[in-house]
Amino acid sequence: MTTVRAPARPALRHRLAERGIDRTLLLLVPGLIFVGVLFFYPLMYGLTLSFQPRHGGGPFANYRDFFRTPFDRNTILTTFKIALPAALLNVLASIPLAFRLRGRVRGKRLITTLLVLPITLGTVLTADGMLNFFGLNGWFNRVLRSLRLVDQSVTLTGNYWGVLISLIVSGFPFAFLLTLSYLSGIDPSLESAAATLGAGSLRRFRFITLPLLAPGLAMTFCLTFVLAFSVFPSAIMVGDGEGRTRVISIAAYDAAFDAYDYSKASAIAMIMATIMLIVVSLVLFGRGRLYRGATGGKG
Amino acid sequence: MSAGVLERAPVDRQPGATRRRLVARPGVWLTWGLVIFFFVNLVGVVGSVVVSSFGDHWFDTWWPGGFTTRHYAKAWGDFGLFHVLIVTLEVSLIVVGVAVLIGVPAAYVLARRSFPGKRLAMLAFVLPVLLPPIAYGIPLATALYRVQLANTLVGVILANLVPSVPFVVLTMTPFIEQIDQKIESAARMCGANTLRMFTRVLMPLLLPGILAAAVLVLVRTVGMFELTFLTAGADSQTLVVALFNSVSGAGIRAPQESDAMAVLYMLTMLVLVVLALRFVNPTQLVTRVAEERDR
Image 1: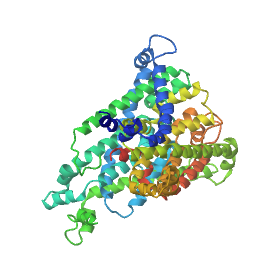
Image 2: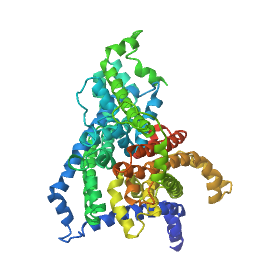
Image 3: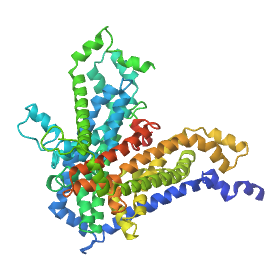
């Protein structure tokens, strides 16, 4: 019996190693500790803090107040009104351009490099430039006036349009580069096959490319929407900061750094994260129902 | 390859079709028209900042009345830009260093091993990159306040590390996966211990990937507004936060001073982007984790 049992029960170290657990895994530990301490712990801390309102009133007082106060509650709608059009526009506009630039096109690298610039420059710089360029006496309005397209300058900063434009300036390149990478992943010979069978360009797009690209587009929409939904600096700089551009991140910031009510601020941050999670999972759920072939746009 | 030829085949059937196609399809013109419109506005946005920063007085005209560099001198003194630049440099270099030190070993394990809970570990690294900074930045800033690290350089560095470490992990994992594992086994067989194998064999192979990840983290950290803004005090703000503060809290100073700072920020970014493009392709600067995750 003992001779049989001995090989059946090797040392613990060996048994663990067989399942992939050995000393190499220790290399992972610093990273996990780091993410745990600086990401998950603060998130949990914020979550529990949000249930301990500063002014009492039960654990859900912060959330109840948020949804009962129109000034706060409306920030959700405001944010959607800005983020949804921005994300949709960015994704839809990037499809035709990505079509022009897939495959090998002259100047592709130049265009992608130029498009990377507004993203790396960031929203703060874009907003500062917009104040000059789209301002009442900026070049944009001057051109419009000298072309007699408008009689009076159009107000494009300090309101809803300012924030929307800033989201397009930084969001469109982002959406385009993503769409391009998804589109490049689709095998062009599929379309050629359809063309050989006599399908016109519209039918090829409708029945071949679009179904393959759709999952990638859903992903692009998600990421662009999350970016737009968390708009913060430009909503202050080129928005009016109150009223139509008081987005939810401003509400959270105000609660934390104007009212010093960290409990309420955490609650708003949690609401914000939850809304984003809901939208993303809705889109991704819809995406799961789409066709995901072997040759898809990587989506 | 033949793919490019095949793709164009349906359109190029008759000779001279390329020329006629441009006339025949307004969609093409519309697309390019919109792209050009976008770029013209982009150049306008950036250009107006540059022109304004050198402008002597610029009110109701196409072009400033004269040119001067005094806004730079004034901005340099008023905003304490030397100090701000030093802080920016300190924060971003330390963040890059620490992120690489923590991230690369973790990426190595994730690329080479399969172990129980690996998907969970992967998720733990994906979430901080996916969640927008402002959503977790506020709880993080609150937690940092509690341990009295907010408004300090350490706090800013810690906050900026939160998305950077996972970013290094996520960019390095696919890079390490494509290095042939047999090379490591061969080194082992020739008698190299773990340290020697790592420094003599793996490190030289990893270096291009580490450089790419480091330069991407550098660009992101210098441009990272939200986390720095939420955690920085007056002494620990980076260039982009100082720029935001001067634009949004203006009133006393001439807007040209902010523009001068914006140009300085732009130049810093431009240098970094040119540097980055030597190591990575442009798309990598923006696409975050989408591609890694959808592998």
